[in-house]
Amino acid sequence: MFLERVYEESLAQAAYVVACDHTKRAIVIDANRDVEPCLRVVEHQGFTLVAATETHIHADFVSGTRELARRTGARLLLSCEGGPGWQYGFATPNSSTLLRHGDSFDVGLLRFDVRHTPGHTPEHLSFIVTDRGMSERPVGMFTGDFIFVGDVGRPDLLERAANQRGTMDALARRLFQSVRGTSDLPDYLQIWPGHGAGSACGKALGAMPSTTLGFERVANWAFQFDDENSFVEEVLSGQPEPPGYFARMKTVNRAGPPPFPTLDALPEMGAQRIQDAFHTGVTVVDVRSSADFAAGHIPGSLSIPMGTSLATWAGTFIDDTRDILLIADDDDRLGRARHTLALIGLDRIIGRAGRRARDEWQAEFGELERVEQVSVDDVASGTERTVIDVRGGAEWEEGHLPNARHYFLGDLIRKARDLPHDTPIAVHCHGGTRASVAASLLQAQGFTNVANISGGYRAWTEAKLPVEHDEAPADV
Image (cartoon, rainbow, N blue to C red; front, top):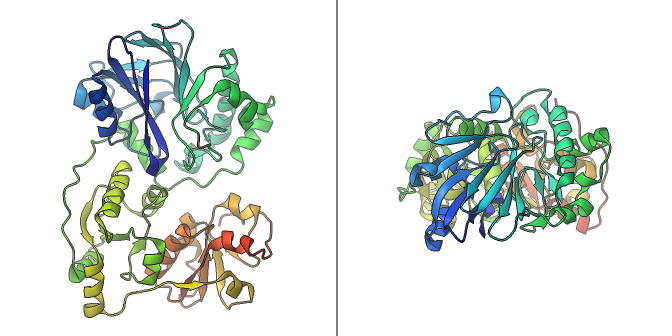
């Protein structure tokens, strides 16, 4: 059996190319929208792609399964579990095979046994693979967002991200049964999960690329519970706030995801065209580093630094029906940002701008805007600023600055709307990226006295300054 993990760092997401060495027939599991890396593996190895599948309807990226089938003629293998609301709208008898619990399919000498493993989503499947050229015993299981290294897929997304009230308790109980349902499987079984550390699909994902079921049985918290109610309480506590675009991804992937766009060269925008873009509702996104943004940026632009959280905050704050203009000073950063945005369906990028545009702006429209940096010592000594903590609720409960206000970044504009726009504000997160996004959001809303706390909560604790512990305030 051939196996190659194709990992997308910007999403902490894994796809798998699996093939029979004897017949050279291959399948791809859980491809994202950019199918080229998977196709390059298939081509390089001389395989024929005969099938494409996914473990569930993804919420954190646009799926590439349909595109693989379109490009290669591979047959789609799709879940039909989960009930009427969780069926694929693009599945047809000519192109697709619908899978249920207990089904199996072959790729050459490889047999894949289908398990319905609901909990993260109602339709979720896992695939147990047996290499019959070697043994009739199974080799491993592709678990998608069911079992991760050190964690399990969160069951609260449908309620918290897609507003399907009353679903997270029921899904948490189904997840408990799915975990217990692995008891008939051997300890040696390899586990190949759909995400690694950094994904928002769980709360404590490990960074190892794979694990074994036996190791997870002794090390993964989710396997330590015999009582369903205790498991439900634990799995629903401490989950990070879901990114705002997850509900949209579910809809796109269920209806029929579009192919990856052609990333042609972008026109260079000068200061006047950027000014015009603001007036026509274009979202101007600065993907430079937080430090570069703070040192000088075009007023009204949104800071979302290129990095592992770009998809999270771009998906939360950028309207996919509006055009986008990207600010970056180098082609590599620009290219990586465009690629990441395309993975979550943000395709309407109309232009780019760099250092020249900022110079023109200063000449034509006045000084660039800056974000003042204040030290933790300044804050601790009683600076006259309203301190806003934009971290998640679980982080706040673990400890926060005395007298700070907790406005989770995703809710910042709504919660800050009653503050006077000339209020001196100091924002912080754990390290700095989310605070940069927050400062840009506040400045774009007309707040005139915004600063970042350098180093954020991490710098505060490293300085051994006092912290408070209490629950996050109720949402209002």
